[in-house]
Image (cartoon, rainbow, N blue to C red; front, side):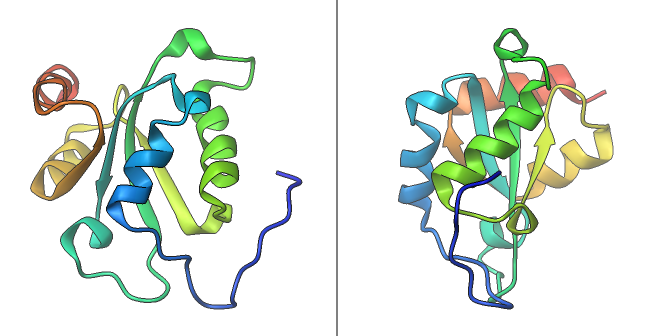
Length: 126
């Protein structure tokens, strides 16, 4: 990631839910089929240094050689103007049941429908 970002030491850029939804619908992220925000930001318990926790279901056919998760990290950092330390990605297609259960406790749908999310939880909760 060689683009320039501005970061105030010790704080994470604040992005509201509508902005996150808009960004996940950017055509460069069309390979992301379902996007969920979970963790402290989904629960409304974030603080100045809280990162963003994203759970994504991605189209594996969009792999450009480094894998779709690497592609997602790169593009989310660029589109959202976030440093890598400011967000985490969980790939829903290979997350273990403990992680899926944790996500199910509190999440906000950023991309995809409630039906799609329900199907994802059923299919990938091993």
